Length: 329
Image 1: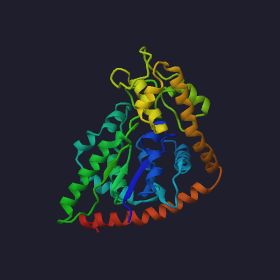
Image 2: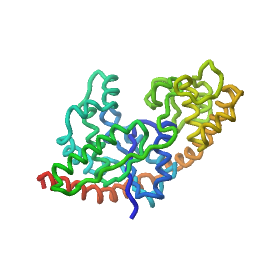
Image 3: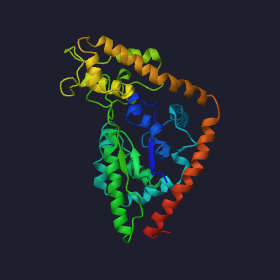
Image 4: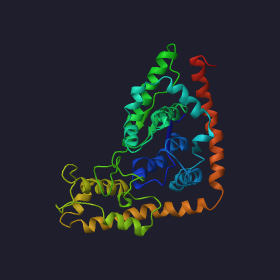
């Protein structure tokens, strides 16, 4: 029997090339080696205000992108988080076994809270829902970007604590491990290499959306900040912007960074940026073509419904084990 993996992405806007490199591309490769469960985590999205119509559209759009990248519903389970009630039910059990200090220390909470005048309770407690997402499927591995390490560690700590308190010497929950990409795990902004690339960046030149046109992609890469050194080198301390572009190039081409650096020695940044733009467009265009086909039909809705049935069968078993262990069933 294959080991199981779980991962999810919020439908809070179109993913960036950073999301693709950091996590989503790997989902396609992993589904051949693991029993894969992929979730569109729409309940996480409502920790900040959402337009209901836009959220529904984004949920379908993200699912279509999963499929367009190559996720095969005959190999993987792909579903919408809100279609599986066990997620929100397990989140309450988990909240009751997490400390306030643990939640307040979460980096993403601190970052988002700093940008909002009014902070909802869900923004603080959503890591409990994330823990539930993972443990409900007995996931042994979680393919994620580098920025999610803190959440994986929180999940692992929770599993240890739950099994110790309620297991009577047995492991009720499976302790997961993170699966992180070797290169490009943390793609930075094209305009500010000290900040992670984000679809919510107020400067649209800082990120490449998976639905950007070829013209937009080329323009963004050619206008990406570099430095006055003028040499293509991988030096994150002295040339962070160029190093970020090299990470992207290496990840998309599957080439070693040293080989890329050697190719562009003495050429300056122009040819390097132009080739990176062409490579990025060539990577994204086939995904966009399949995405447009999916969005025009009913296939996405059918796949989501089928995925929800399959996901419910697994998640309900784990939830029942947790409730029995805690004495509420």
